[in-house]
Picture 1 (cartoon, rainbow, N blue to C red):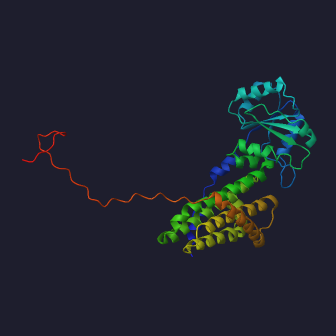
Picture 2 (cartoon, rainbow, N blue to C red):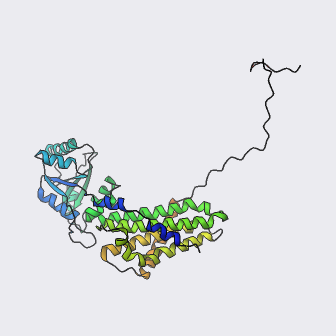
Picture 3 (cartoon, helix red, strand yellow):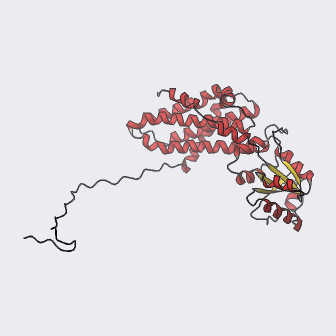
Length: 360
């Protein structure tokens, strides 16, 4: 079994200052509408946790603006926002609404914008479905009669609109946390599985097996610790790595560490194959992520039984993902030629390149 000392040394050196700064920087969300009641309704939904169903207090709530904007100060605030959401209570796309959108685009052409059509029932949404003709503006339907009205249309569109803002979106908008966490866990699990696929072929060389497995153990464990910390930030926490991950590290340690050791031992078995190692890497990361998420969301105790159940579920999913992760063989290097190169025949000093050399 490889020495685990380097693992703890590297974990102590993880720098999370950039992640903390990313979530502590306010996310400026401007919600605009001609109906301020509709704007407040959407803002309340964005601040409601999908785990508890309660409205949470965040450091900086979204800004509400009545359309059309009046005043240079409001125009500057909207132009400097990170996201603009236009709330519509009617599908009548008259000239005034188009003028409002054109005016906001004129303030900042690069401002990410989303139009949300609010309906009080599914029947109303179906009967008055918008034409969605404001391309390239993203338009979504929000059915307020549903328990989680933002889950089906709004949240996926917002994640697609701001794909690189998972942590700020979840940290500042509680309604985004469940979907953002699932996406983060899935991406990290696939990243670890892909990493194993990339190093798996080299590990088939006997002399490289032990050192590369030790390196894998360090890299995958580091990624899982970072995933746990990112989930803490996404769930609204702002502490440091030891403060947020420390309370569950001991419990999760039995979860992710022994699985990485098991994956390492699989790598030491000649001819065992790469596929099981990919599946184990995916499953271990998946189990750690979902166990940590339930800890931060509900304060749920992480038991060995729960970890085993999560791991078994993830292992089946990891096996299905193997089809999308195929290790690529390294291109063969050209073999050197064994033929001797002939030396050029000598030329006379007064000969030209095109003049044949004649023997005298």
